[in-house]
Amino acid sequence: SYELTQPPSVSVSPGQSARITCSGSALPKKYVFWYQQKSGQAPVLVIYEDTERPSGIPDRFSGSSSGTVATLTISEAQVDDEADYYCYSTDTNNKSVFGGGTRVTVL
Amino acid sequence: ELHLLESGGDLVQPGESLRLSCAASGFDFPNYAMSWLRQAPGKGLEWVSAISGRADNIYYADSVRGRFTVSRDNSRNILYLQMSGLRPEDTATYYCAKDAPRPFDFWGQGTLVIVSS
Image (cartoon, rainbow over the protein chains, first blue to last red):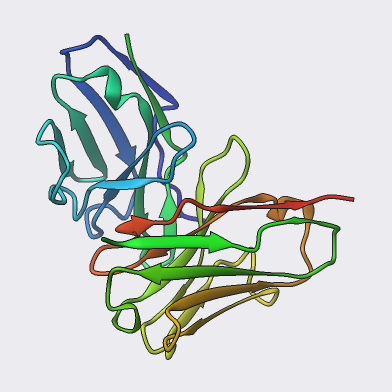
């Protein structure tokens, strides 16, 4: 079955940039979406269609995609950005798939 | 303001049934596809089921197909998930989410389902 692969954890110092990758063989043809989930809360969409940011999401969140790898970048990371981040996409049969999630620690 | 409120989660025994509800407000519910997703304790997100605005397109994850049924009442702005033949591996927080114009662009706070003897 199709998989999206994310690193389990990423650590970043406040004010530095954090980069989270999401790898999948179908990504050259499929959009990636990114969700932030803070502890005890519901997920929130932070990036859609690889690079677009919903209204209300700070511009320090950005997305990119090249080949089989999509990347979520948190520029000038803040303590408030500590959360689990999940990528989402579909396979070639339009079956929904989430990555395993990446825990971002800001310290 | 958009609002999604799930309810119906409970502790049930394996093999039993349960119906979850999701009350929607703040948007034109009949015109939007909706999804159910779940998250097992300490685990990642899993998409469970999706239903179009008029319920003419319905999809299920392989893990629940044949056991779960999604439906909606557009006159009352409520989404449902009927779960039968529940298994311990169905234990999770179940979320409903607005599924358009972007996938899962707004989520409820979730309801916990525990399947255990």
